[in-house]
Image (tube, rainbow over all chains, first blue to last red):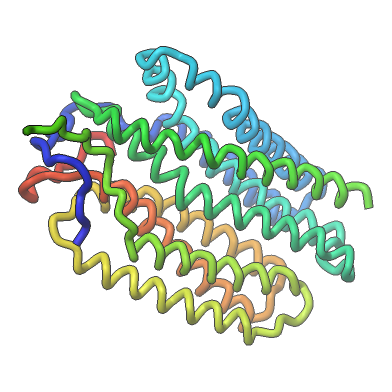
Length: 199
Length: 149
């Protein structure tokens, strides 16, 4: 059984009437993007596969690097109310945007590699592709194991009438020490993709 | 002498559930990675099957540990896990579709599909537990779900 650290306090009541942390209004955009992706895969069109992979991959990498090295340090210097206000509005959108970008990038990337014959390239060149798989795997584990739970917990906590500042502070620090790792992974992705594109 | 109580900053214990689900995900990724490194050529399935088996055992262990929990925020766990399950299910369906379109061999495709399904189950459990573990109350009714999840 889990043992809680700290003095037990009266439990905070569930929030009534809080808005959904998942922006349901944006789900139709996700649906349109995924439908376009499925049609592209079925049609096996090089230009469309390239568009989806480059557009989604660029956005994924740019948002990750921007969040980690620009917005993150800036948020830490903001006053707490401003920090909470931005977090409350930004994070729900990222809950929809980032998984969609990842899904589109990986799926279209695999099909693009198959179309261009990269999957049958012999070793040692093939190691560049394997390296890209490793990088994605590391990022996925960090995302699902550390960042996503912290993101959701912080959002749910912010919707309570008396958010637990200590819990929020501890979880937000995860973004600090994982920003360096995910930043390195994204830079590695840029290097790998540039190398593959110029074979 | 009464000391100042420390503010509660969440459940900081090392959990076997987190360890098992992350271990299971790592094994799944290794299985998928090995298969992806060989496709579209014939894939030697010894290591992918070994990693698949390890992933399954770790997932089962995590589920057993989860079911043995007392005083746990189950409503919050399911509220979070169901949305993550929708996300991972979309990922699995799209991935299986892609590999099917590519003409992946039946046995390899089956192994891939099973590994992907294991991952799809692991991630919601991991995220749902990681969120719900910080919630605390003195009675089950205290583990309410914030509206909007």
